[in-house]
Length: 166
Image (cartoon, rainbow, N blue to C red; front, side, top):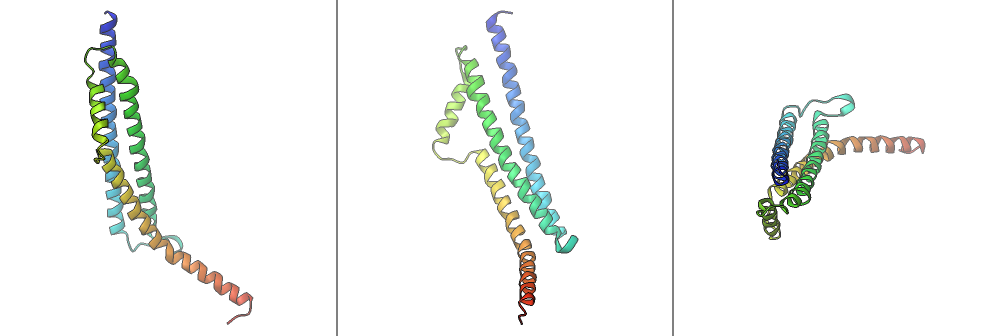
């Protein structure tokens, strides 16, 4: 096998690995979408259940939802960075040795398209993750507010009793 054939075989192998990586990215996003959906369903069906000391199932699932959404956002960012590195730093450098550079041309086309401020798929994924995080955060606030107010009221009652108040 000559040098050119070896380079081409390495290129083919790396491109296949990159495609497998992108497939894994889609599976990971599907996992997060299903997780958010399951948490919303769990919120619906366990809304009235209260655990230890007034901690509701809603609060627990909302905290999980915020965590899952944050992880999803970070995951989308990580995959995007790694995919860009695979394109720009590896595949494009290998393609410099070839007369035709399909991935380089594709990446340049994506960059030009992206410059037009159009939503890309990863932007939509991030938007969904952010909206779900805000939804779960709002639920957390609505569940924590009464608990915080109860603690504040007890503290004020204690202070008033110490001062010999009303």
